Image 1 (cartoon, helix red, strand yellow):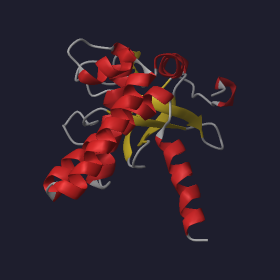
Image 2 (spheres, helix red, strand yellow):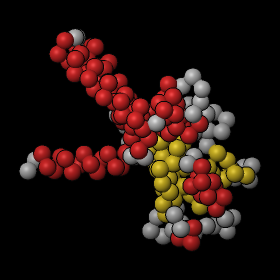
Image 3 (cartoon, rainbow, N blue to C red):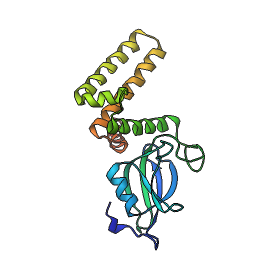
Image 4 (cartoon, helix red, strand yellow):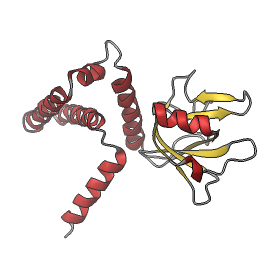
Length: 204
């Protein structure tokens, strides 16, 4: 984002609306200055300006409920920002998913968005004793192999085992695909666009 397009107020601040990139839910409202915008773009984690402490603030720095940024954009007048991100856990200090209470998004969409945030964190930090981090350390080939293995296990469970077992294998495939998407840098918007194209092709 071009900072020249942003109209900061007399305090050097601009309001920032945070939206879940996976579900579209509005999560919170906070304030950003130049440092917060630059830190967000540099680190991939959403930063704000704390008006009460007059300092830079990384969301989730204390709670661990970080926001993994997808993009930051100014509105048509440049006097407000939209921050699209994947939340890792509840956003509000009260423990609610949003600062307006419970998340109205379907539970599946919320879960996938939170998992996407967690996987981005695992890829960045590569913590020990994390299976996801181990896959990222092994690289793209190992992740592709994992996708193939899980898909085969799903196919076998579908024809030879119970629906409950098939469901377990199905979610293993979803997890492996999200790991692959994270490795390839494929985001929710990319997936939505590709699915929309396939939907249009299917109804022709």
